[in-house]
Length: 221
Image (cartoon, rainbow, N blue to C red; front, side):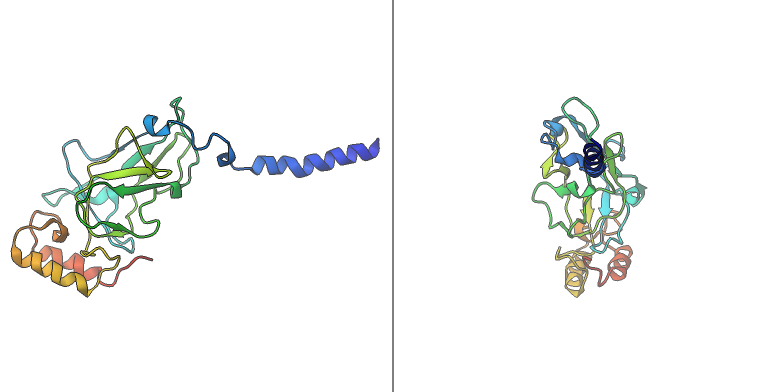
């Protein structure tokens, strides 16, 4: 009788902690069904504004709170994702590595470093996460920007109004001398090429040289 008690206690001591530590993602119904139809995402930018985010491959670009609009002023373009299941319940604890940004369409040559566009953190108790920290990315695009979860876009909003540019003009993941001739061509053309308007004030001029020079040599980690 005593041996049976000891055995039962031993089993509980071993298996209960294992069950408590088992990750929620081990459930058979994970990912939850129809999450892409119940989840939403938006930027903090006012309606009608088309913000541009300045990116550098090493992550030294602009935070989302410092995106720019055409007059050169800054605007908060923070992206917030609300991740919900089919019952509109928050989906908690989804790792940031399962949530990232991609570009829709064929505009430009935007390129992201490995893990360079993931969310700032996992989804919280309310099922939300955000993008505020600078991206590790290069190239340029006029968007739109899509929020991807588990490799799929949201059905409610497949693309957000957020454009991107970078001193990595050729989109090869590093700011180097090969980007300079592209910038020079846009500078002398005097046509306000979007890719080289790094200060984003509607024209490629001397104000755009400093961002290019300061980022020289910056590449993906």
